[in-house]
Image (cartoon, rainbow, N blue to C red; front, side, top):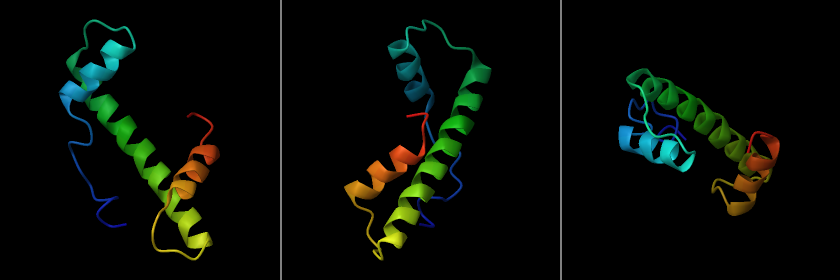
Length: 79
């Protein structure tokens, strides 16, 4: 858990943001968007991982399984 929730500045790289933008139909991305996207993705992943951990602990397991990830996805309606 500590490794997954560790403070990481490069949660998503600039090319990663560009690839996601191109898939969404955006041609050019401003510099300030990179920082904002990194923060948003980091917060989303932290909450998603926490939900998966809660599901695994509820089932008295230390290993996160596919069912825990699916349960975490059901808890977050934005997916």
